[in-house]
Image 1 (tube, rainbow, N blue to C red):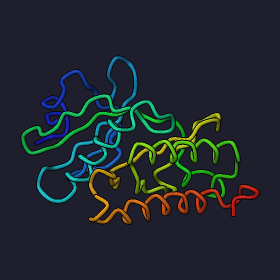
Image 2 (image 1 turned 135 degrees about the vertical axis):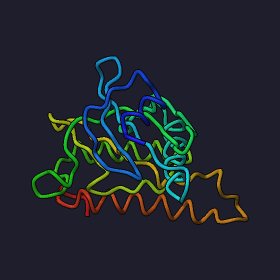
Image 3 (image 1 turned 180 degrees about the vertical axis):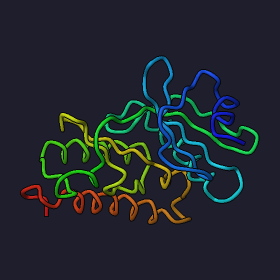
Image 4 (image 1 turned 120 degrees about the horizontal axis):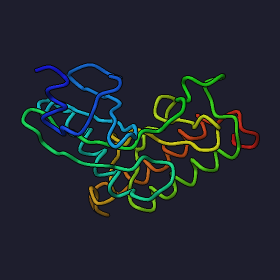
Length: 187
């Protein structure tokens, strides 16, 4: 099935502007009401569907937290695919920035606040890396764009792996430090 057909079946109001990744895991910039959004379409077969379901759950749980995109719609299962539509974070990934690191204390503080807010809502294992953090064109905001590896405190009990969520939270903070190592006083 052609990509435009798949998108039409999922949501006929969406118009594809740019394809960011090819099948089987499709990520595309779409337009709905003249606003760019990210449409993620993953096949139901295989483990990748879990990635998209976790991202949808993390975005729902993290609704309203600055520094993550809003979930516009969780389409769920659509024939052979699972799809979500989320806000588009305009800017460059840290990978695309000079020095491939965040060097601004303000951005570090914003990301730290985002991570603490997500942790407070029981979301960890945020996969903080150069490809998953977008810095706005004016370099005043930063957005964590992929929460598909997230784990949730509700997945674990005190007797069943509570330390996993604790370790994942610590790893998130260490990943942020690694991303911002040039900011004075971070390391």
